[in-house]
Length: 360
Image (spheres, rainbow, N blue to C red):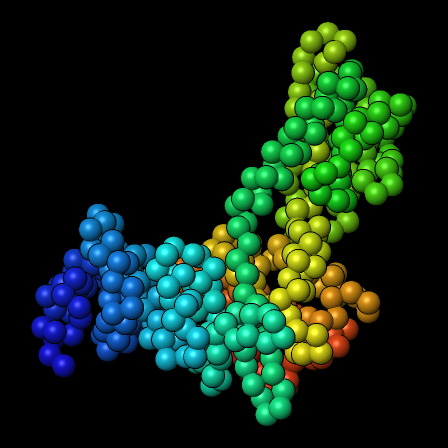
């Protein structure tokens, strides 16, 4: 293949033109041959995406690497059974479809042949793998981390406002052991109002802990109630300076523990009983995304809970390095209480995937 027709015409008249105009003079780490295969696949199977890229003013490796990665995934998955409905959802803008193709492409590169959207026992898991007489069913989900954080932040800010209004002349700090959604805020405010001033954290059963001190100026939020969980803790505070009505209320909560429990419970119905089942979670491109989920998920593995899930596998995508490169980090969390563990050949292959981004 000559340089002139190496790439789709939308990406320049030659490889050198592509590097200059699309990559802004920096060579991508993918070879011309790999880039060509990927971008031709992108043009063939998602032409609307190529058109949008060509019309957009943005250029640089950040744009190019995403296009090449998507093209590589398409090239590796279009031949798989059941791929076409997923491709249609991708072209319609469903983010979850991209996550499903990412997982399918990764499994293919590990030497397996996943099938997509296979019907079994009246259910349609996202992917299925066969190892002799053993079938493994995979569900891929894409929680919106930014929406989770936004919703929880709004809830705890509203709660801080309610505490501030109900408990005057006090500096109150609350740490919630459970997410604030659906919590009886009125009962929480009454418990704090009825309490004397206390420097040591006081338990509120099924809610969390609080301290309550006399209000003083200047109002300072100084976390003094311990967190009993790992992962992201979000906080909000409200202050009022108005004579005897003055006060400060601060609320903190560990975000992902409750979410993890509901998430796993909500996915169980996708999985056939008596089978090996894996849940894949696309943790997004936000730094810390995987770390938010690891401890929360493993705490959900209990002898009498979630035993239908053989393993939870987390992954996160990001760009890092000089020159910029796209990387994925994976964390495989086998369920020690699973009714059906993953086949060893699959588990061993998954554990060869990179578990962290390289530092370059």
